[in-house]
Image (cartoon, rainbow, N blue to C red; front, side, top):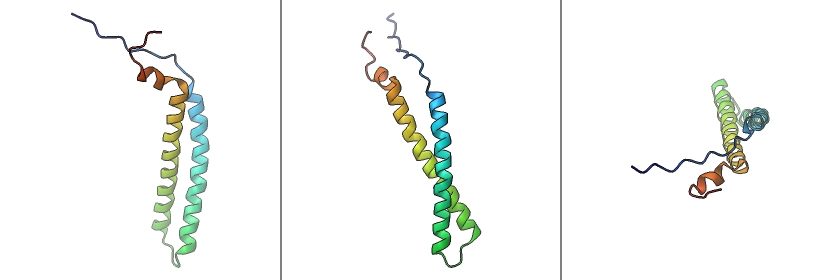
Length: 93
């Protein structure tokens, strides 16, 4: 019976500390963007309601954080070499 080709395992890269640093900066940026969004809603609405401001802050903050984190993961994965190993599975080093 033929054996399947072994999956290449790239060398582990230190993505964890870089991702943690980026996530902390993104969290701070998300809080600032959420506060800005809440301020714009409060300024534009003659009678701002509390639930509207809370929903705006959570929505803007999580959207900015998730978009930034996914983009960062894409760039970190590309720079670590994991994508190259997956795109050429039959190449022998």
